[in-house]
Image 1 (tube, rainbow, N blue to C red):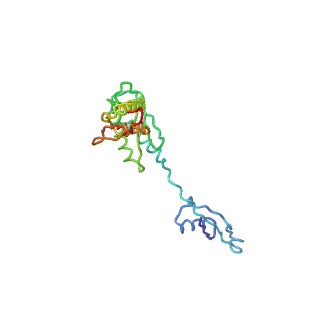
Image 2 (cartoon, rainbow, N blue to C red):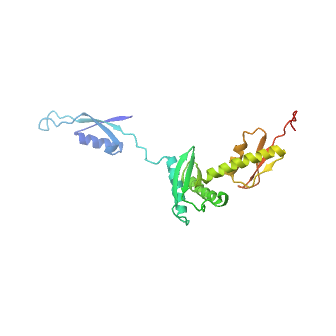
Image 3 (cartoon, rainbow, N blue to C red):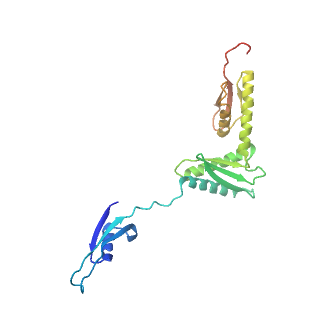
Length: 226
């Protein structure tokens, strides 16, 4: 760090000169007194100027919440504000962040009102919260909203459905197609069948809601197998 030396009749005057010339306050500098000032005998003989060494302090970084924590807090407050407008009593929201995803969990919705048919109300809440969060913070974040562990139950159902439809496609050697699914559900189906070397999957349709087509790969005929 750069240092400066100043002289004046007294220590106080030297410090004032340092602050004035460097355009800083006394709190922004470290001061070392090299030689204290002295007025000498009767203020006439043997006087000595004060000499100080001044070092500028490093500027303190502004205290701001880490961006990850900020995103979690914004998402949680946004969901709580929305739920306050919906006639569902006794719900609570917990939030955390893992693997870059902000997870919001709603507890207390025993009626399933916030889930809706096939999770559509939950998806709508999730869409809104994602919009709010990504307008509020600089780094893009992905938000998942769940209620009463619906997402996990839905994932288990979709995996089992995908495996059964995959078996059917291989058995009849014809493509089979799911119902319309949102992007999150389609991804679960694709991943469930990704490692099956006898199947391909692809999306079909326009817009957000699409179907997944499960396609059996052509097999070479072999003895004992049709």
